[in-house]
Length: 470
Image (cartoon, rainbow, N blue to C red):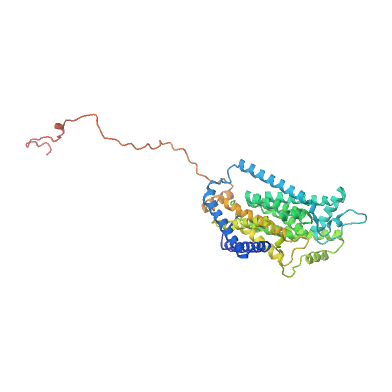
C-alpha cells in the first residue's frame, strides 16, 4: 500500500521508532531478568543488534538492490521458490499443531456448552461471534460426535484458511517477502500455535474477517471503482455486529481508497466510495439488529442497547502484558525484523509503505486500552498480525525497487486520453537510415602527379607595353 511521504509520514516513523525501541528494551529487560544477566549487558547487546541491522540494510541498499529484478519481468524461478517455501511453512505449521494436540486446552468451557446432549441447547448470547462459533462447534459435534479433538481440528482448519487468505492479500498489497514473513510467523510462532489449539471463537471469526479483508485488498491496485464499496460496507457492518474488530476493516477501506494510485480516476470517486461504504455499513448494521430482534423476540432498541453495552469503553488499562516466563525465540526474531523497518523507511524518498499499518496499530492500542474489545475476542490477535505484517514490510522495503512519481506531463496526457476515450499518443522511433560513423583514420595528403621544382614558379612575365587589362 503506497502513501506519499510528508511531514505526517516522518511523525508516524518517529512513533514507530519509539514503539520498537520500547519493545526492544522491555524484551531485553525480561530476558535479563529470567536469565540472571546484568541489565546493562542486555542494553549493550540491544544497541549492537540495532547497529548491525542498520549496517545490513545499508549493505543491501548499496550492493544487493542493483541485482534485484523489476516486478514487471517474468519471474518463473522466483514464483516456484516462493510456492515451495509457502508449502514447506504450511507443512511445518501442521506438524507443530499435531504435535501440540496433547496439550490442547479449552477456553470458557466451549466444549461443554457446544456438546450434543439431551435437553441442551445453545444459549442466546449478545456477542455475535461467540454465538456463531458455538453453533458451528455444536454442528461439528452433532455430525462427528462429542470428541474434543474435532473442535481442535475445526480451529486448525479455520486458522489455516484465514492465514492462506491473508497470505495472498498481503502478497497483493505489500509484496512477496512481506507475505512470506507473515506466513512464517503465523505457521511457526508459539502464539498462533496456541491459538489453534485452544477452543475459542477467534480463529473462526478471523477466517471471515480475512475474507472481507481480501475483498478490500483487491481494490488496492487498478482504477478506483466506487460501486464495489457498497457491498463491502454491508459486509463490514455484519463483521462489526459480530465483533468490534470488524470496524478495523473500515479503516483499511479508507486507506485503500486514499492510497497513491498510478491510474487516474474521477476526482469525486474517492468521496463517492467512502459515502457508499458508510451507507452500506449503516444499512447492514440496522438490518443485523432487526434480524436479531426478530429471531430473539426482543425489541429493536433493546438489541441495540445490549450491543452498545457490550462494547462500551471502560477504564484505562494496558491490553498486553509481557510475562518473563513466556518469551520465546519468535518474539526476539519479530522485534529484530521490526527494527529493519526503522532503516528501510529511508530508502524511498517518495512513497511510504509502512505508515498506514502503524496507524492501525495506534488505533488498536488506543481502543484496547479503553476496553472496547471483549475477553472472548481480545485485541492481542490483531495486534500480533499487524506487527508481523510490519516486520514483513520492513524486509520487503530493503529489496523493493525505488519508485519514482509520475511526471506531471504524463499524468495530464493520460487523464486527457481517458476523458476523450483515445489512446495516449506515443512517439514511434524509426530505424536510422544513415550509415553509422566510421572510425577516424589518420591520412597523409598525396597526389598522383609529380612536379619538378623548377616548374613551381607560376608568375607570368608581361611586357611593359602590354595594355590588355586597360
